[in-house]
Image (tube, rainbow, N blue to C red; front, side):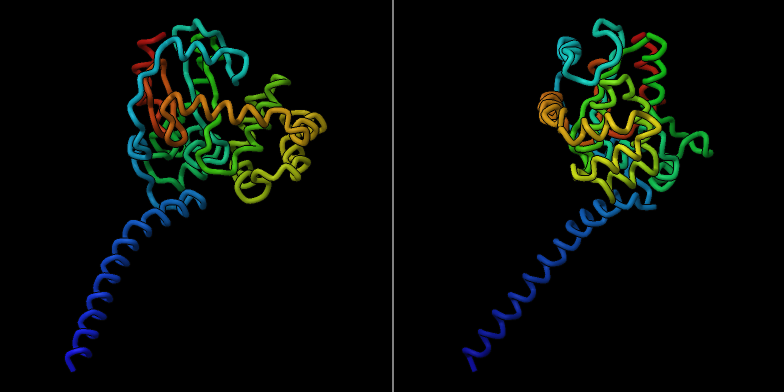
Length: 267
């Protein structure tokens, strides 16, 4: 009886311990699973505030680092000596990057009230179009840097580099950042180079499809993704999107309204 009693006690302890572990795993693991699946499906649950999306480590970025991005190897627009330089670390397949691009209104709505665009009755102002507007007006410069924030944006990023060769970066960018682009990148083409023709066909209204297909099949800009990721690391990257307004970091899909004062003070 004594041995049996000890066995029962040990078994009960083991079950209790396993139960505690299981509860802990369900709590944390369930949160992670829900968060990931929510992002993958652009879930309807309200997203965390932009500032809480990432715990970005504090880094000191210098003006020299910003100007160093205009070395001819990046997707840079404008001049390095501009008083105002924007940097975006982005992944075309990332849902929050789509939110910040403002070209996928349905996803903005699904991400929660705080990300609903003004045009749809919300208060969110997508930062990327506002940045581009200032670049087009000659009041700012901008650098777009790839950073793996969702996993399916490699071929899309290569397409952006290819398009830039023809002066069509923004046309392809806006096409990829649409609802259709999100679907193509995350459920169809992903990072599959054998789908180059499909990607080129999707982008045909923005850039010559034969050129795009050839560029993607040849993997002409594949190495740029590695270089971009190295740059992102130097800038303290930990998630997408992440913006710099000059040397000030905004880690997350911040509304442009939260950057506007700094922008105006820098012009």
